[in-house]
Length: 424
Image 1: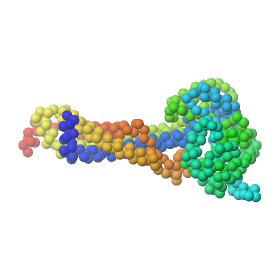
Image 2 (image 1 turned 180 degrees about the vertical axis):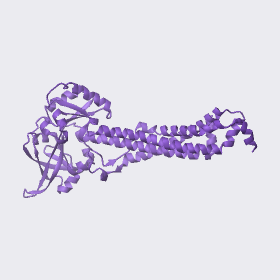
Image 3 (image 1 turned 135 degrees about the horizontal axis):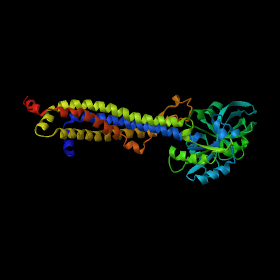
Image 4 (image 1 turned 90 degrees about the vertical axis):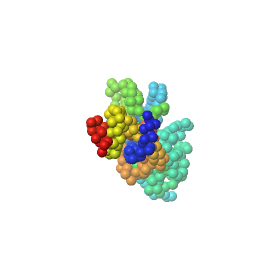
């Protein structure tokens, strides 16, 4: 039966070509849009988790309440012991202490007078311990523009755009002016080992990276850190998984009155990311719904026109004794066959375009200059396993709905009128 229908469709392209093209275009747009939206969602998750939120974050309750100010006077102490306890209690997660701070970077001339200076937004992570995954997590080697990564204490990295603004090159000395966790003034000299392109406007203009131990000395935070970020080792970010971890940890300190007791939050609980990720899921569902609706209308009209062209054929089939239901089911089978072929073609083209955008991406740097969250300047598609099958939802559903509605006219054909129609 399928071979018979396929031969009929190939030999009479007037009833198959337009629906095939319609389905292929709709599926192509669906797959392309899905992969791009998914790429944006994963880029937001990855960029925020690497630089700011982690999959999980541990901090004091007081720090959490004023987190937008990065109050290092409310930081965690005894971080080494706390990290070991977290690794023992949650073995599938890697924990990384971080310090985030603001300050002023001053560059002096040969006479020791200020040549240039600018505000910086600093991040301190474990860069020098052998085996540390922090340099890779922050993509420092990949983003290195000039110089080299820090190899010893007292060396820092700054944003490439910041370096151009200050007129400073790798190997030069710079002075970081800031405040300690106790509110005292901090003045520390560093060597700029290299410059980095982070891929985020805010970090490129003001970013500074240093080793955690250097920041602890400069800010008088011995064995302290503002935040401890947790990263799932064996799987990508899943809210249900990290939410269970956070609940188990927070239950231990639920009744503690100490404002410096640790609290754990998930990535989705920070920077309004839960809302953003929800909106992306809604956008994906809306994309599918729009294409299913639009394609159904187009294919409905195409089916009506096709039925008019095949009016005589349908009449003959009914006249020789074929039942209305059998003719109707045959038309449904034809439409599903067209839907499968169109879906395969549209999916192939959509995946090809998505792969190109996954490699090259689209630069949106001019649109995210003032973004409140870590938002990459180059957005890429992301091909996931679901991308290979998502096209079958609009491809088959739209053809089924369109033909089912258009084919209702078959049941309106009266057998008593068939011979009169055939005579004419």
